[in-house]
Length: 345
Image: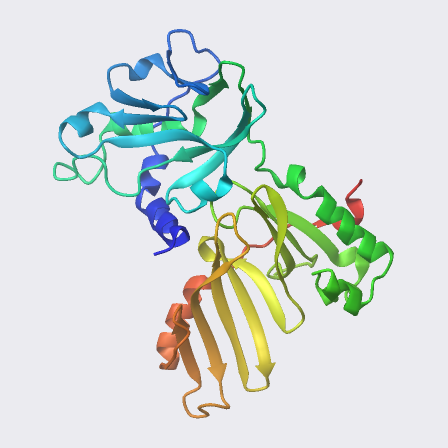
C-alpha cells in the first residue's frame, strides 16, 4: 500500500491521541533535558523526566515511551531526522516535514517528524494509550529544535506556499495581464480556462493535499455561495522545486475532497460522466488512483453505474452501492481563493 493511504489510516487511528493530553513547552526551557546528535538538539520538558528512553544517531533522535518499551510493545513515540535528499523520506509512512537545517558546510537538510504507524503501547490492558505516552506523542508537533556545531535550524522553512510558489504565481499573473490564448496557455502547462473565465475570478490558495507538511499551490475560480472550489491548476514541490501536477478544464474539473484526496469530475457526453479520486504522492507529481466512479448510459443503459479501483477494471454495480461509496468523497473543500490580481511581485 502506498504511503499516502497508510498515513491517512494512521492519522485516523491515532486521532484521539492528538485530541487530548497536552504539554506546554512554552519558551522557558530551564530544567529541560537537552538531547543532541551531530546536527541538532531537542529539548524534552522537565515534567516528562523518567518517562522516556532515547536513541541517538548521527542525523536522528528517537523518543520511546519507557513503560511501553519495557513491556515489549515498542514504545516509539516520535522521531526527528535530517535528510539531505527529499526522495529519501517521501516514501516513509507517518512522516512530515517540519523545517529545514543548514549545516556548517552549507548542506541543506529537510527536518522530518516521524510518528509510529502502528500501536506502540500495551493495548491488552487498555485501548487507550497511557497518559505519559500521549504526552510524549503530542510533544513531537511542538518539540524545540536547535542547530548545533555551526548548523542552523529554520522552523517551517520550505513548507509554506507563500515562500515556495512566487515565480509560478508571477507567470500566471503575466499570462492573465497579457491575455495569453488557449494554445499558449496549454503549451505552458496552464489551464485554457484562464482565457475563458473573467480575469477577476481567478485566484489561488495553499493547501497540503498529501499530509507531508509541505503546501501545494491551487489556482482556481473565485465564486460565491455553495460553489465547490474548482481548481484548474495544481503545483507541488519535487526535490524542493515547484512542479506542475495537473490542469483542468470546463469538462474536466478538479477539487480537494474528503481526507485531502484530489477528485476529478469529468463529462464525456450526455450519458457519461464520472469522478476519479487520486492521492498525490509525496515529492512527486504522480497522482495515484484510489477509486473511480462513472455513470455510463452508453455501455449499459439499464444499469449505468460503475466502480473501478486502482487496477482500472470497471465493475457494474447497483445505484445504491454506487451512491453509498461515492458519497464518502463528496465533501469538498471550499477555498477562499486570493484574487490573483492582488499578488504582487
